Image (tube, rainbow, N blue to C red; front, side, top):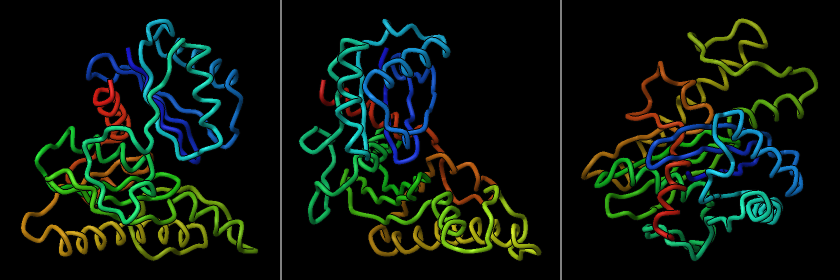
Length: 256
């Protein structure tokens, strides 16, 4: 079995693969960084609770946007699984031609998303929108080129900013809204967060398509923790919540 680990700014997202089948998924917060021992104990306990024996793990693939946890993550895999993890970083084979001015600037999470999308939808122009702590938008051509994209505050980050940077605005539940006009402070925040993201997705997808995919419209893919929030709006051609784990599995195979 293969353990895939995505270390984000807010959560550590893990999945267990047997072949191409995702057998289990689990998460923990990444805001409390934790030592290698704390991470190891968590991973082994979470695996058991999900019906997977830790000794069945034969390979580990990881990506991280939190540099100060990388040492603990590597040491954890070595000590608790006896495995040297494959960590997605510059120099790792990806099959992507990255068209950034400095390819090293592209986050490992965005590379993994792109690899997962290319694996699942080969030969297509792609726009991947990942709703994480930051919302990221990536454009990938059918020639396997990472063309660029956008980075903007995620839904929860925007809500937290409103709460922490204003005197009277409360924290609210993030949820779909039927109407655009809120009739209370809470509803006004909720509708503002929801509909601004609906408009953002539609406009960025439209502009990226016009800029780089005018000859052949792209497949628009939604992923990340909040992607299902927008199911009613039909913003995406495909919704793949575990896209980043699929990308990590592909990276591991390319670098076997």
